[in-house]
Image 1 (tube, rainbow over the protein chains, first blue to last red):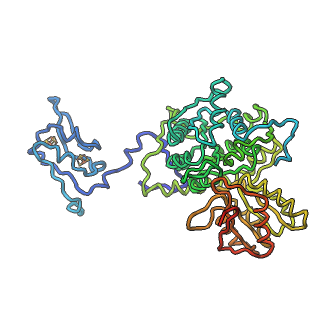
Image 2: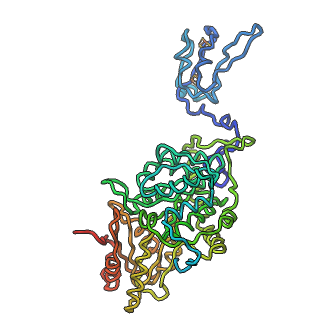
Image 3: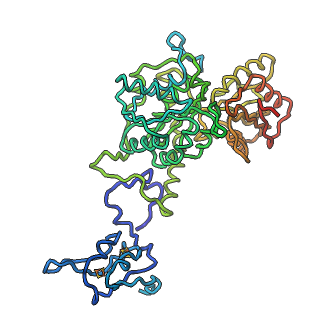
Length: 102
Length: 395
Ligand code: SF4
Ligand code: SF4
């Protein structure tokens, strides 16, 4: 997103449209990246419940059960809460530097 | 300014009553205030107007000045015309939100009844309260008399709400000297004031739910700087718009305001510069010394922020000497008005000699003899640009 100059911005730091926070990619604050081992995940949804940024991606299967899919790295800011609350410890927090080549 | 008052139409009132009547005529949607000496009578008079149903204003009696300023910020963001008034420590307690009000570009008008900041505690006049807010992003006007306090309060509304300005305005009036002193004041008819200020055209009102907006979001290194740049530009516009607003006010009142008021300046070689009510005493001394043949004059500063650098240069360039009187001090640096005037004259082609005089702290009386002394120093060539002197201080 190209940053606007002072002549183009609404005055007073006002945000003049609703829902603009979608454009604010907090993911680039991340130092540690959560990575899940879905083979061992029990789909208990605790991580989804606790994530402060709604960055856990899920779907609901044919049986009406929620399924953990992974993370939305545009908004996940790497706080590590999901890894902390996961009862089966299948979320690892890995340094972003490991993914630099991606 | 007294010369422009029609004494047949004038009423003898205190400055506080004059300002409260300006507020009655402005009839803001919201007034939130907390009483503090010597601002108290403004709020008392206004509360009576509310209680008597004279105005439809929503009056919020809050529990502190921090809350008073917070409430008017909330009201102004919602799209209301909002006012408050304060003094000294009340203003200091507001400081956090005073800065926010300007940063959010809310056109709040606030009479400040100037009083010394504690400590030790003192309730009398000086400008330390307003000077502590000089870099808060508010426009600052200073009144010499009760009439000016009334006029400037009305004029401030139009200046603050100008679409290119959108900045809050502090109308400074000297504690007790103006607020509690009785002088003749010529009130404008209510409908003329209402017509002059017009309807507020809110910008991004929170109550316009069809167009939802967010006030006060996080503003980090990526945008904060740009928002400060916009405020700097708004101050430039304030300088541009003020003469037009003053012109329109002249049309309804016959009283002409400007950035500065020159007094007996045509051939003046020795000029004093000051803020507020002391200008009346200086005018008296100028007349007295003129009778004796001294070429003395006065440049009264009406608008301190934005600072009218151009006008100061224009009036002071080429004079023999300039004496600046400050009713506040900046510990460890030059006094605020002196610093601004001296800095403006850096670019002058014919720089005058300069002298800085601090007076009247904590309400210490300033006498015509003190002012005469400072003029005499200037006439004798006995001024040092780097020396701060004191009027009425015991050694
Ligand atoms: S690290 Fe924090 S922000 Fe990212 S998915 Fe986990 S809980 Fe959400
Ligand atoms: S908390 Fe752990 S087990 Fe539960 S859904 Fe999230 S990753 Fe899977």
